[in-house]
Length: 592
Image (cartoon, rainbow, N blue to C red; front, side, top):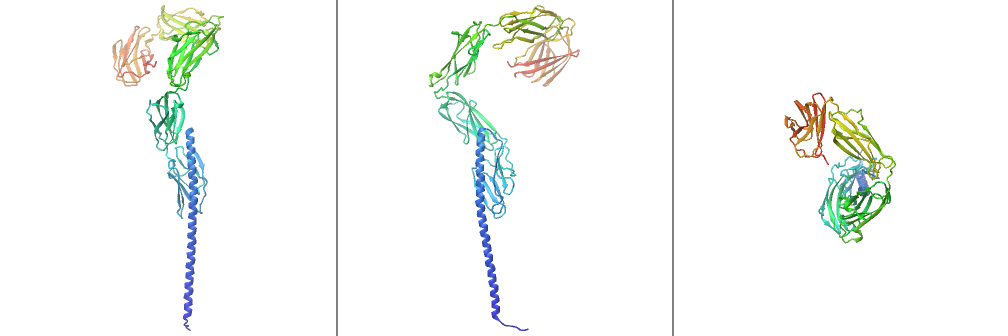
């Protein structure tokens, strides 16, 4: 082997190695520099695009909020949807969009980590955490029925709004006297957000206000008077609550004159109803002076004999029926009224005068009325204990039926008389078929007679003659007869009278159904017969031996509670030894 000792060769080799290493290092630095430049460029692109995306979504949220408020001004809404155009990637990277209170947040998924926040009005109600991915197929923003803006199918549910808003009118106080332009101030609250407050004057819509919900009411545009203001607060889910206050407007102004309206007879009309019903209404936006109302018929003041009624001081009804028939000619009517207040307004607005006329025609009279009694007839069977009843028909072919009089007697003593009006102004009835049931019942052994008289509008009458006599025959089964009517009482005792149609009736028991308290005692003829320990609503009472006689006997029920409520019902079922029963339905303190 031959060894060469060459120092120059070793030097060349080391230089080559060093040069290669430096070259590699330089190439690496260049590559890293390019990568850094690319990442910086990507981040710059992402921030610019994310800002543009966030601004677009914030703009849609603002537009949607305006649309919601516009819809709420017309009434509540259900939902609104808007599509969003998103790039699937930015700088080849998917990204996430998320809503927060007052911000749209756009951020990368992965690296580089880039986050952009775009602010919007923090008062706009969004669902925090609602988000969507750029790579999903549906990009939709919605207004939920609960009043919140969110991304559709975002994985975050809107807060369910089950809370109604609250509203209170805090100024001016109710029944305050106000003038000129007055601020109506309200306090409102809702668990999510109050969308608007609507204002009404006497139930008529006036305006709506958004936050801060104060309404400046210009009272000089209306006449003086008393007005009811309603403030109706809506939340964004459409729930609402309201409060009302009453104010007295006093600007010394009256912008409206009183008015009058004919009810009957119509102006220029003709009628054969004699006497007719003359009727009209006067109204004013503030108040009518009822002492000023005058009604004249054919230049004669008939106000003293007219009926003047009102439901409010703003409206009065005047009705007059002449005491005698009017002549068959044309008649003139004049109505005059003044309003109670007119301040410094136009004096021409103070009063109203209404004039009209009508003509009375002759009532046709070519035939007399006719009438027939259909029950009872000679062969009809009258049952003891049943209500006295008469069925009839009547007619008049020309003038029409005015009224009928039904009279029933027993043993030649009057039982009852009933007047049944048929034709009432302005409707003419030419035939009628009906029946009438009296409060009294048939009693065993008594003899009944009937009379029915029909009157036509021309003053003619017809009576088919007395019907009867009809006898409730001896030997019929006994019936319980009750003498009572509805009770007006503040007592805890209920008392009425019963007797048998004859012979005496044996009682086996009694059920009493009532609404309040406890039935404590039952008296027959003033004698205590039972002290049931019953609770409402049913008391069952058994009698060992009790007989209802043919003479009136008191039946008294004593309760633990004083009956005070209107229309309290009391139901009594009396059971007889023969297995039959009798129902008594009583209304305590009936509404008039």
